[in-house]
Length: 430
Ligand code: PMP
Image (cartoon, rainbow, N blue to C red; front, side):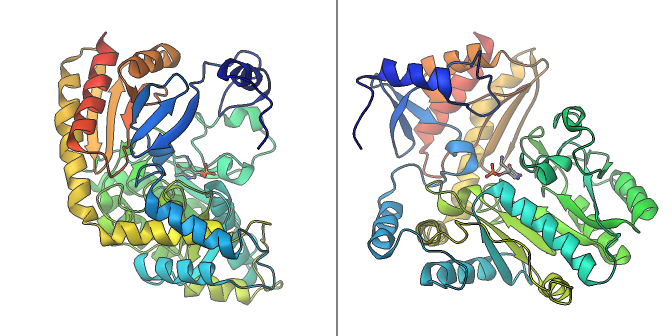
């Protein structure tokens, strides 16, 4: 690539003036940190500073950056083909990945749609549910039920099932499909289950099942909607209610998949199989954009009986071979490792490291599940100021709202984790 910009200042200035960043003003953007390389668990800034990564690039880079095994998989695939259309063409990388996903996901999820990003996997899941009922001759069953506090992505169908307040539904009033929202699950992961926690979901189902296609949930961890860890029994009860009323159950495992919560999939905490499941983020170890929507026999049959009778979706970069190849390598790396005890090690390190934050009167809660550690403040943080303090302490953590949280790469060693946690605890105090 021929370089247009002579130095960091020049390209950063262009970035600041012309490039939209996530949820950022184009006129008055918050500062961005120039990263020029990433190796292992370290991000390298343009001035040579190294930051310990606490975010895994939003849950994705579970094996750290620039991993030789993942790089090799990419290089080998590149020699064959980087991309080829999936319409009317099959390729071995997609089959290799499909087989792995069918084998490791909860029982019955045997049919795989390889999408190009997490939110598109959610769109496909919603479309599958709607086409299923269309195929059954019940097209009026076209609404979704979810819980408050959720997040499923930014396209319109995804947004319609994000928390109505955090998700800014009022901006898109009249455009977003109208869905139903039950209360957020209250009983926390480690607390004693209370049956009343499911009542709101149950009432919504009883009232609206005639127009409901499916329930969609982030299992166990509500991520971007608040980093809330809820009780596995909620999922078992949701499965039971879906079965009683014939509804489909969709799990969005885009953030939780591939070991992050201590089980391979969050659904495994409850031993529940959904009818449709979405995967993304860590699927390629954070190297390429790829996601998957898996469905069971019931869904596949329903869609196939429909008027179409095909699934009406087919993006240009569907099943991109590079992404599929590196996803296979990432899954193999994970499964060949002692991932369960490694995540337990991360969990202990995050628990020990973040515990001192409890002494800070500004802290409302400190919670850890698997490789996810959260400090919840009583008041929203000044994101840019806090970010600066964290960077000054040598770590990359991106706070939002009241949350200062980390989900570090699985390869983080104990020293890295201790430094990361100490920086978080210190930055919120000083
Ligand atoms: N669902 C969940 C649970 C997510 O956390 C995200 C990403 N933050 C998405 C869907 C959307 O995925 P993507 O950003 O890859 O489109």
